Image 1 (cartoon, rainbow, N blue to C red):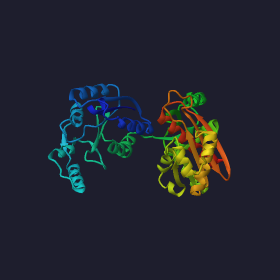
Image 2: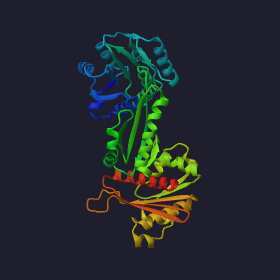
Image 3: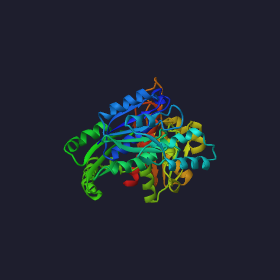
Image 4: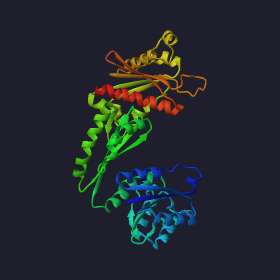
Length: 408
């Protein structure tokens, strides 16, 4: 089956908010093996929404809308969609009571117009909203499946992951299983070149690359009668990919490089400390995004200025003057100082030029050093791009150096 996502909201067309829902839904649908051929954005206008639905009817098996399920006059999605498929909107007493209960629980007064959120297409399947007042719904009409989800991402995502996915899975007599292979240190074009022959000669499982900031993800997906049969098709492909890319593969189904590093630190019983200059604490931010990392990450020191490097890390000014603040030597001093100051097994230091400085040839030059057991590992990065990109890639490269050290 193929699906079309229709996002409703004039604020999307004006650029006031980003269409995060489309990303969320496309990811969930991809994991279900459902092709998404079109993304449509339409404003809060009944005629234009009705026209968009008519177009979608002619080219999609599944239509999914987001937004426009609120209680105000410009929340038009339900009545337009229902009219387009000849469905009446009827009051769902169970949902009405849930809405009343939500307002009571949050200590807010419920307006009369909130009752309209319990008006749902007759005979529909209700998609529960655990984080708001607008329920979603799904129904079948004219051989098509239509689903309506709320617009706020914090409501849309859990509904899509839990209830939309369950509804769509029930339409199939087979299962689709996928696993993600995460690769760092190789660009998307080189990854694609190395797997092209393999991917082009595969039908089931399928293999597809996805570029992410600073890394590449390969998704292997298989369709079979049972999960066990699908898994049996997938894992030989994963092993081939691991042989092709070797140590550049940092995990299978890992949420992030920082998660992979955190797990390795815990597994090896190692502690980590960081001293950062140009990244301004970005490495510390990424590693502390992982729940429970306090067992292994002892802390980070942001020593941005030369004075901070002297006062906080004890690096002599004479060394900074001799080698320059952006150098392998100072990065090494920072790594050692982080480990010794916080009594950590591993210390990491990062210093560089994040820019932008149009008159400098050094923008994008970053030194990363790792200190463990009296020994250093150092890398030099030359990364083009904007300030945020350089800082992010430097932090990821530091994480990857930690990973490779722990896996050695």
